[in-house]
Image (cartoon, rainbow, N blue to C red; front, side):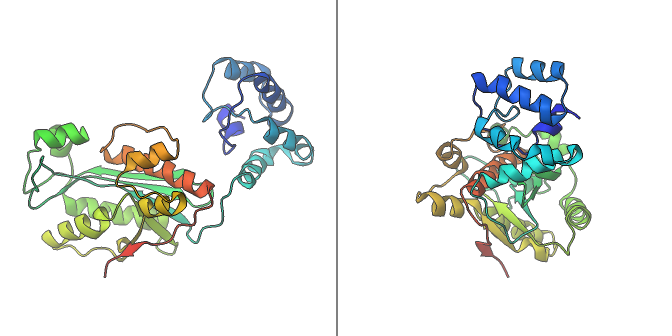
Length: 284
């Protein structure tokens, strides 16, 4: 059994004193992990996302783990971990976190604006872990040369969009990904940071290129609405949510795939507080 498998799905709270040795012994006794590997793990000083040292959690396992077959032990840990949060069942099989990046200029609206990065993460609605990723760069047609402002803001290079695919090709690839990775028979909900992506940008570019907006892209959840509901604070962007939830920002702000990962972390943190996600907006 790999170390990562033994740790998967357990809460990320970390106690860095006696708890390290305590948890190491429990891994040895119940997790099936060899002593050298465990001691290397704890001496390496990995952060709480990777090393779990929650004494209360592990003490609770002592009373039940002896009755759990070894091959089911990791699944048992994941179920027990979920009981220690305020998560409630969701109405959807999965969430699709989406965040476009588009051509732009400082203090000026480019017409027509075109999507240049198209990232989507499939998030399991139970574990709230990433299960699949769709990510493509799109070559703009009307404004093929990115502005200096756009390059600085998004860190997307001219070479990346020059090597990108046409919009209609990416839409076809995305539709294939939806059908194969998600399934049209599944109940899924897009999650965005704001309404711009699916209310304005996608319909606008589809209209310009004479492409029909897929029906499954016509409703979504604006994560900022959930944050305001759960905290009582109205915010305008992503960073205030990350700071308000005491999360660590990942990657580069305004880089589409990195933004999706941060939105996924916000989604997970709000779910841990008992948030239930429903559509907040839709288009005809």
